[in-house]
Image (tube, rainbow, N blue to C red; front, top):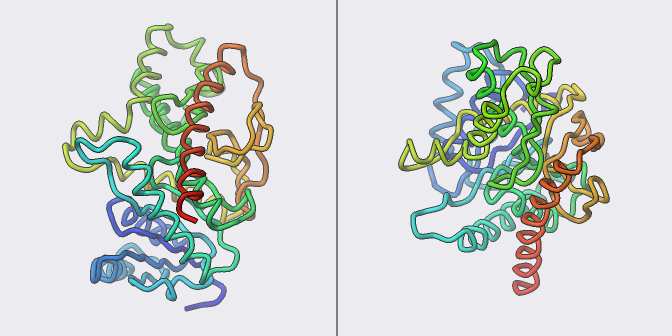
Length: 317
């Protein structure tokens, strides 16, 4: 492998992982390693993707493996591994199962890569980023959750559909935990710089906000088996691009808070500047009382899941 090329490891060869690998290679962002516990699957997908290189014109090397040795010296690691929620499975069951998976993955990644930037996609998202941070002991700028980019993309999509305008002109901001308590901010959501509070009726705003909150569930209900992967995959790659190309983009991501927005010791969706070192800084927006109350409620939900991770770590040690 060329030493000057960046190395991006994708953990989990499912739908999200495969989409991340494909888009990362197509954008020529670096060499891609797909790792999965199932023998043959990451190797097969990697070979298939590599064979598309002359058609899509990319020089990235794509390899598949079941051995964490092959992930050595990764610049970025994307963790998509984990079980999807099955019918009859409680959120607590999912949290405990996936926490163990993310813990094991992070330990093995850190064994072979000294200083990676880790992007976590596994659900329940806020708790899984917290588990990766506790396990990997990485500085807070190097551990990031992917949620806000996706939630904001959904809000942008629904605003453009509602207004019948080009989504190129739509910017949106969704903060908070990744779930029902997420906090879409209409005041900070705009079309060509004009806040949607000026362009849409309160009913329209409520409609797009509600649809954004239930964006993932709407797709799960339609697919019947499985969940969204195109938009989540594209959201991850937007973050990888911002980091590796040092774009210093301002994106809503799940970041570790130390007093920002009145909260500490949790991972929470906030706007951050993203560049070569991962999170360059957290950006604090002025909140109305109503917005702050919604953020606080979301943060309390997230805090509960972080406490559950602490309990799992305590009982497991």
